[in-house]
Image 1: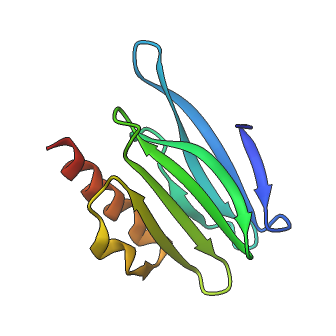
Image 2: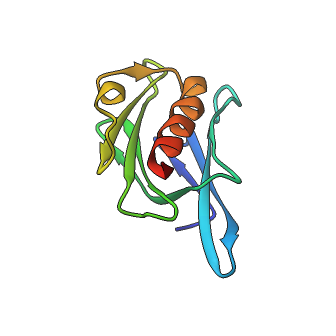
Length: 121
């Protein structure tokens, strides 16, 4: 994945910042910025979420994240620029209560922290 990419006609800038979780175990953490407002919508630098893919789908930006160290635990985040909301889909994670919600980007990090703590138990 490129270190910096732009999506939805330049509306979103995605940076993936590598950091070492353990010796030779690298995670590429996403930082997503709304270029129109300059607001950072998502910043997971230094955390355990690894950005696996980023694609545009029906005027949304979809990010797929894996939770380190168990990469079978993945999430898809869909950012909707018209509403300013984010939806979450989860694979192999019991997050059904979250999947039904659309929430604001500033609430996202707290949800991801809660999911990660539950995964590590």
